[in-house]
Image (tube, rainbow, N blue to C red; front, top):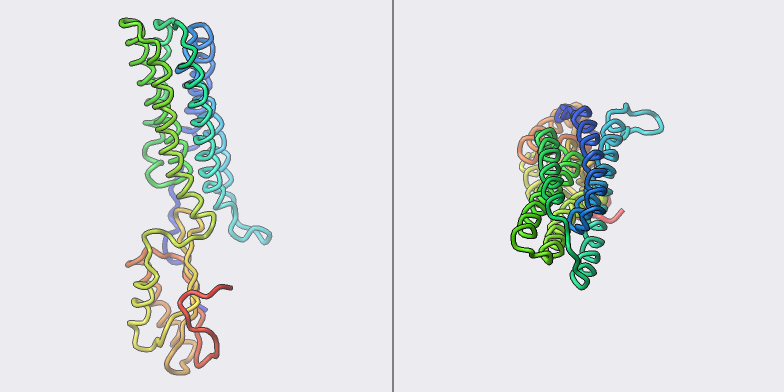
Length: 303
């Protein structure tokens, strides 16, 4: 059995310090916006505060997951906590959907029962949210490109920065035109955006947790690549999954035309691993050699 550990072990160093700074900034924003929303009567400001509070929770979850993901494997946890960040991303995405649904409900209630809003306070607090969340977005932007957990935290912050921009626009329209209904409309727009982005992240993290084959990997092409080696008759009983964003695993049964030596199998499997890594990005490979074994030869077999 070949098991490749030769590729893909350079884990991106997620900056815990940046997460902590973002947590502190969002706590300050949340407190300020709750007080300001209650004083001004702005639902969009309170909704932004609620979203900021969900940001705080999501950032804390992301920070804890980041810390745990670095813990070493053990006899009781042979994979360590490498999936902690995927779970965090799933939880954070789910929280986005829950917050969005609640915001839509509150917006409908407020639209049916509009009230005057102190737009000046809304404008200044929206500016505070833009600056603080903008700084947090810049801090996490680089890590978000390579890590699903950090992308979930980044998404919370980016959507909240966008929400603050929307609140600012609404505050200006209310101040100069008296369009108080804009507050409810903006709240719905913020919520719809959260639903859209949150669902995409929930879907991608769910696929990893369920051990689904990554979207960019084609099993037929993998089978064809392996069977191009003249010694290999067929490949079957294939499983492909992601442990996390850095590790894609493959295990498969490989049938040979001849009863080869173990040393020959090692040589061939090394070549197969190189092909699978460079062409498909698979960096953890288990190959089970077979010769005239009486078992199902289907590519996918239900265990």
